[in-house]
Length: 358
Image (cartoon, rainbow, N blue to C red; front, side):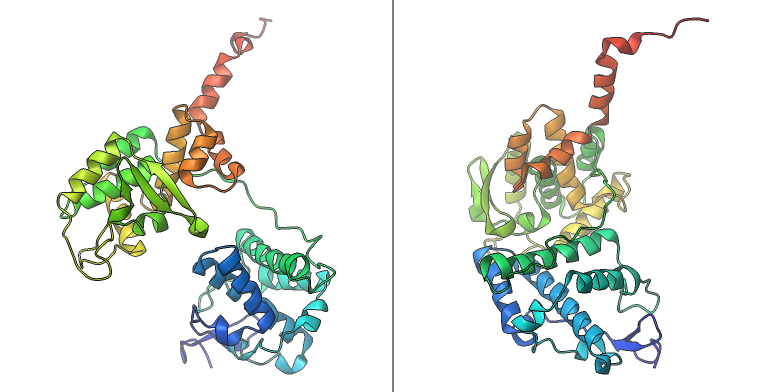
């Protein structure tokens, strides 16, 4: 059977065909063994991680256990991937997993894992960044079993190294590009779109934080923002944000129903969605003559951080504004002000010394 014959199947390296089915985000309640359900519940309730994060943990660990079962049992070699149940995975099975097993799994990820399982033209081998995220999942799982649940004495990932990642600096708009973006906002929803872009560029909101804003979150000259891990922070509004909000609220339609308190609405009078925001950001970037393939809503968050630091805001204050848990996450923005680095280089008094003439 080929991809052309059945779109629900994908061909894996080695020639075998395995079914690829869309997963249900609630499926771990039915598909996960008890030890995995306990781990996921710990992250959702105690660590207050988002449902999206918990779902990603489940998918990563489900694939890991499927790999482990298939690699240890020849009878499963030709079993379709999605038909390998992990319900029988228990603590003795997990206790038997070694660092060598995990290196084997990482080799599979780097060489044989389909990059796009539902595409007939997929490449194979995941990027170092994707593998690093999956390693982080394994590390979190085994740390939980040894340090929290106390079900294991030895941690097989304790000495596991993560793939080396290329250090890349965040891409951001310059001040002139940011002004150009705001100056070119037009269209039927210009007040809403202008307000959204202004909040991104001034407050550095995450897209999930912006779409989750309610009218009741406006508290005078501040916004109550629900960030990662359900952590609430207060973001103060400057004059530009207050003016943009006032202008938008003057034309915002009152609605009923479950989204009546949503700050930003779609044209269907529903809470604006992530895809709506991505589309409007892309549209206005293009209208401003900027490359919408290079920039996104998250790049506007990078822009807010960079402009604040370039204009003398303390890095710890920027950390609070952005809602970063760790300061080192914020400090990456201190390395991207190229003009400041040029000024620093020119400021050295030895920088004007010329070589002696022959």
